[in-house]
Length: 124
Image (cartoon, rainbow, N blue to C red; front, side, top):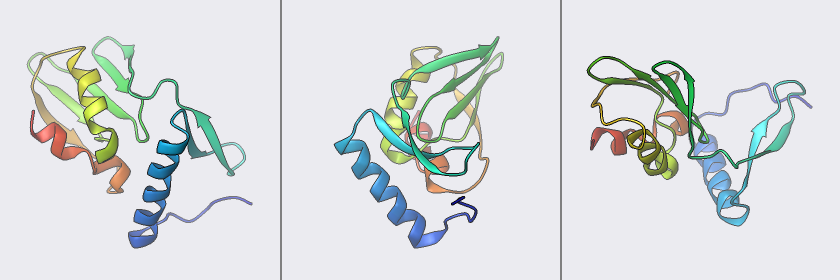
């Protein structure tokens, strides 16, 4: 059965709590939707919290919602800020790569797993 509807509001928050509990119980596995089948699967989380360089000046921190990093001459642009639970880990991974200030954050959408970590990045 394909998962078609976007989860919103309190149902989404409940889902995030379930994911966070799964993260505690099964720290190396997290649920994900398989894009080919549309079914809920688990994925190997061995890359969680790691920075991956994708091209010159462009990288990504693997997380529940990945954090995109674009390096300019004087500052960084981030795409999404992951969830509050994983923000510190993502921030540390970025800081291990560069000390440029974060000047711009772009959100792909407003779900808490994409915007919830913003407080950690605003403290920078």
